[in-house]
Length: 310
Length: 239
Image 1 (cartoon, one colour):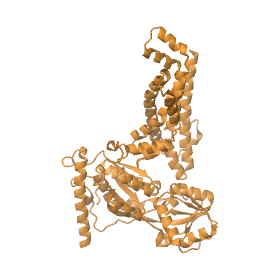
Image 2 (tube, chains in turn brown, yellow):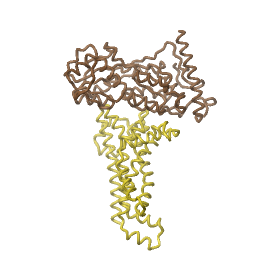
Image 3 (cartoon, rainbow over the protein chains, first blue to last red):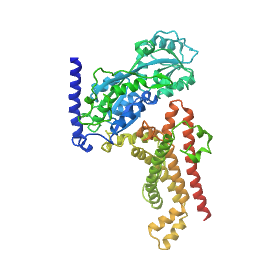
Image 4 (spheres, each protein chain N blue to C red):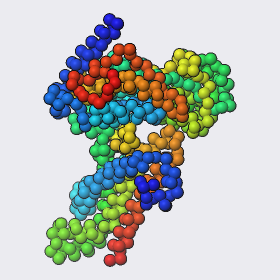
């Protein structure tokens, strides 16, 4: 527990220091000393299309908005674009799923206080008749190699999103440089790519959440499962959430960003993630559960919320 | 369908509208708010500019005219990108915190609509018979009087210009998506989501029925506005 407590203290310290910096930079918010609370403020969240399009965000944002009387503006972009928007200081908090890009963002100093939030996994989907015969593949790399060997249509996001980043990692692992007529980059969101793959009778790598929430409108089936259904760990899809560093962008709403991070990683937020379903299936699995959660560590002293949990 | 009662009878598609009424209403409201305000602002700028350019001879007039005409073809995504750079926290107007707001959307629609309204108004104004202006002058009219007479004569052309600007603004998707962010709240109330960006979102999720229903609403609005303007024009000729 010692390590845990030290981490907690470090977070508290960093939060307090950065919070103070945030207050002096954004003095127009009326000084949180005399009137604690943030009613009427807006938090800008950039996130990926997968959290947005599955409807999970609405499930998380509504109670948070109620709790503090604030507004969460959720902008759905690919992971790459979401991080780029944050780099420019145009968002306060980022919820994405590409650990390598997140780490880069953190080491460059743009982000602070990254937390693991939840996970789901990726699946390789394709037409039911499985033209490349990848159905029996035990691994994603094997399946990708088979697709490349047979020159079966593969539809790629091609948009620097978390899913695209994962896809490129799998090609690299498989030792294949995807090129040729069979490989299509659409540069669009997961939903559009699923539609294109459906129309073209092709394969694609999809996050399970978007696939499940869209299964009723496409004929694609899962050929290679991810770790949730016992598939390879390579297809794991962890989501992180991080605050934009107020030392880099003085006018981000850091306090509210930390409150949001605190909320979505709190037992209540995690429960909502766990209980969220689409078409009767669970889409995301909580990953931030702590046996000793202390929601108050995330918000300035004296902020009042209506939440009784945490 | 109390959300759009006037349209429900006309379009059977809407009877099975898959959205909460509040979602559609707020999206339509945001679309109209942004486009109408942008077009009003554009009109206040464009008509005087068209009059000034149309009535005066100055060196470089051809260049100005062709610049206006070029502006009519500005790709909207490029305009969106330019406005994003302006209002981004890193940009010159960053301190105003305009990114992902309706104000930013209005700004980009304004940039898109203004050349269109100016260009078409200019053509309308210059095609007003020179005798009309001469007569107004000889009757002792001031420059303002002459301008008003010209605007009155050219009103159908100017109305067409405003309509073209409105059509461009309300049916535009690229720039409002970039600077507005397509934001709706968890309660389904649109903040910066317009009909076009909502259609894009619904299509992305394979909900083509919803997308088409929204498209029908958008089309109905454009048709309605067209009908109103044509009507105004007819009234003018009957006078």
